[in-house]
Length: 370
Image 1: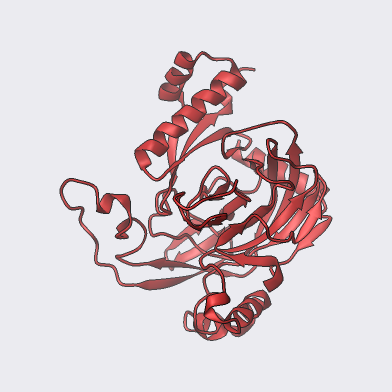
Image 2: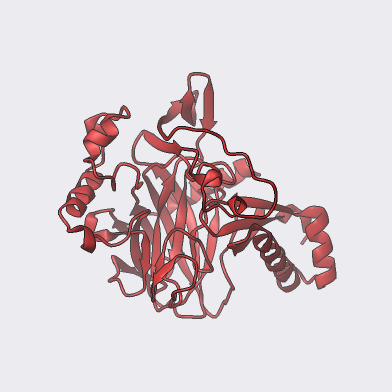
């Protein structure tokens, strides 16, 4: 079924020519936040196909210039994107107090005409491609699941062992081998490429201090995901899949970034292969279709998400969302829906390292005869 989905996506992409290309220039990106009042980088009608460039924050936001920083990892000067050099230069020339947020580099917002609060935004991923032949994964004994801020670190009970792992940035080359796109993890290890965007969001609904990741009223940071989408790090949101997000502001105001070459469920080191990507998307406004939070689908599954600071509560929310879907879309009673959740549906951890945790109910479409 995945092969059919991939084939269909390629065929669809061939027939879908982007009408707008949003480049990841310094003026078109923002660092680490989803502003609700930022001027749109482009305005498009519902149904538009748009190409959007994104940048990995690895190599673009450190103190050292990108060519020098990435060169120490083995990247050649001509392999450093001009967008990265331009962004670093602009940021470096800006006083620290005026540089804004950090973390993810987000392209946007894109304004989709006719989108209004109470609607849903349908985002189809027609094509995702790498912009450079490398990415970076970082590991340490204080990051990801080993971070002091990880909930298990302060939970009652016996201390959890911590591995002694030096701070290391791993440059991982990517490319084609035997007709397949792979990450050359080592001389004897190949990881199949599965590029996707870790962060996709609409502008949140007036975030306030006290909400996860909000330090200033009205400005949501990009680290924790939420009902607006954001840093979901769900690896199945790749070519051939579709994401649905609730709309909170006119135009939806869509942001995308945190590009990944490939990632395992959990993203346990705190990051994936962080690699600049380009995506081709189709945006469609679903008028009057109100959803509580992100959901998605591909050829084989429907995905319902539970998002919470606590992994147990995220699991419960994912089950509640899945039951709600089965009742409203498939006509089951709540009791039968819960029963199906337990016997025929997998609940997967998308990521557990971004403060807010994400659990996904993966509903096989093959379960339903009609």
